[in-house]
Image (spheres, rainbow, N blue to C red):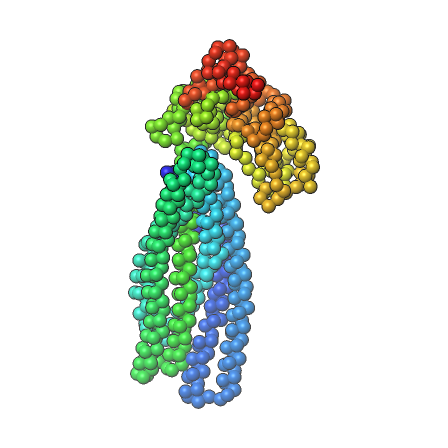
Length: 584
């Protein structure tokens, strides 16, 4: 089971929400002021109607009635105009806050070590970046502004009832126990319920993405039933989580709806009785009843949007929880030390993906600056894992991996990538121009440098033949790139980044053998003087290397120059003869 990414607690969510409010005092004051004016203009009609009823009961002229009708119409128009500007101000503030939330979340996502993402699974992260961001966006755009409007409106309506006659506020309090107790019951359970619902969605996304990515392996090993069982279990867990939150809503909302009706009925009954006793006038009873009926709308909106705020709060807790990564302590406290030189060294390195099950066992390796090392060995021997440790992706369970005497895992991420970079079999083409895809690692790079990087990996010819050259939009929805072209793009990005040590994990696996060999020779000319660690099954990489490291069962069993290892007659010699024989 994957280790889920952290979730922020309620205190952290409230603290962050307060910080957002403090960032925008003026826009928030403008929004509240405009909605206060909307509420005040909305209070005029009930009062005028009450006066009209009082006047009619005592006898009044048609002129007075017409004046009151015109006044009510004027206030309605004024309220509509003010409401337009109030909603516009709310929307602008909401979009501004949402933009900040998204930018900060992207910063947090990009700061997560790759090892943390691999342990947590992409499903959890994908759910947070899609479903949780969408839920939070809805809360920020609609729920929070609507609740602010409801609070301001309710405040002024209550004030209007008190000004009409303090006695008539008492019947409206009959709903208070019903609404307060039911809301407390709901809020105590809703946050945990929505967090469980989001976590269940993460499990579904994670399981389905794993099944799709590993479909060939699943079919080859005959594990279809096991994957179906995993998906069924995830769906069942999601169903239980959604059914629980639905249960909360089906209990809470009917009780709240009942609470809306009671104050109006109570105000009419108690107000009528007070009128018969001569304590209040008919116009006051009419105005108070209309005010109480008007009060139900903001209370209804407040409680209805509260459910959406609970969803948004749970989503914000999951998004803020990303900042509490990494799970394995990588770069948790970045070192202030600077490497003394470019020498990369691993000493007694041990690593385990699961406690008690090491996949690397006491590996020792030291590379001189500018050396080219080839790592070969059977699949599952630990080559890629060792490569990730040498690139600072993982922290060793025991031992150390250092560059210039400083632990790689303690270096700040920005500095680490100027020291060591990793290019794997996986690659990604970002949505944007071809130039954007390259200069993201070196924003100040000129077109000349970009073309030099493309030429270094034999990609300049096809890049210049694109419809708009370097300005051609690629990625999802843009000009399609072949798998080999996408990998060349990743290698060109690496050349442009210009770190002194490179870890190439099957970096040319998608190219045909002749193209891969040609590309590696071109790349070698550009990377001369840099330390290169090449992990590959194609042994021509080993033939060209200064030294070859044979990795078997999590250990380096042979280390030396190609000719020396072939002459020794060990595991590498057998691999070389087998590979050479297959080629012949």
